[in-house]
Image (cartoon, rainbow, N blue to C red; front, side):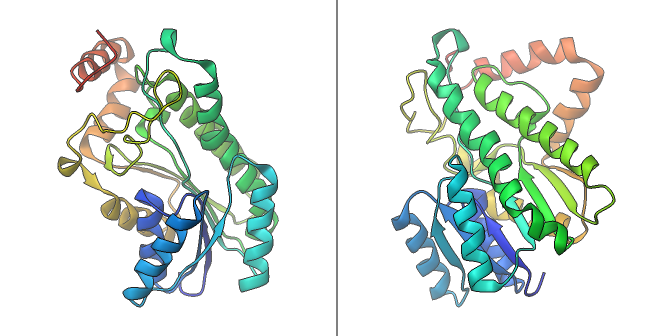
Length: 268
């Protein structure tokens, strides 16, 4: 990965931030994007104190033109793009019957269309350099989760898009990885949208007891180096995907009961 130019969307926190650190410490030239300039600057400064240097640019993945702006910035600064990590994402937590549809629209705009826009903007460079497109998906991209209809739909859509794109590019030398972490300690649950579009502000999980973003980033880095096709993390995640293929009806009940027990679950 030395001297590879890596764009990471949503790179100022969580898995994106951890990936930025992991790739940069292995010699990659990293550009992170995000909507909040203060958070981007803080991440860049924090890394610099550790003698790890990255670049950042304010951009919203759900806006097509912003993705083109990022590509122009990367070419201007580093002359090429080798790897795109589609990490920017948002979650939601509410029963579908209670959800304002603008919430699902917002989740799809960021998680799915953000991946589509960023991938198309970077595509010619990545084909030219036989690089990688990586999608940070979720176990929710394999198994629909109750009270997360919009989130699950966006991750199913992301995985379908990347699978189709991988097949289109099969003879180009481009590598496409779909990475599906299990529950990971990050701010995605605190920022998850509720039925009316406001953030739920607190996580329903004990964040200290689940996989860290840094552990996920190390696995994503290794999978990128090995040019793996798929990456499913955590024992719970692997078991969920496996059992859902064999016993889908049983998993409907197991998943329902699991999420019903969450703190302040909307499932009654």
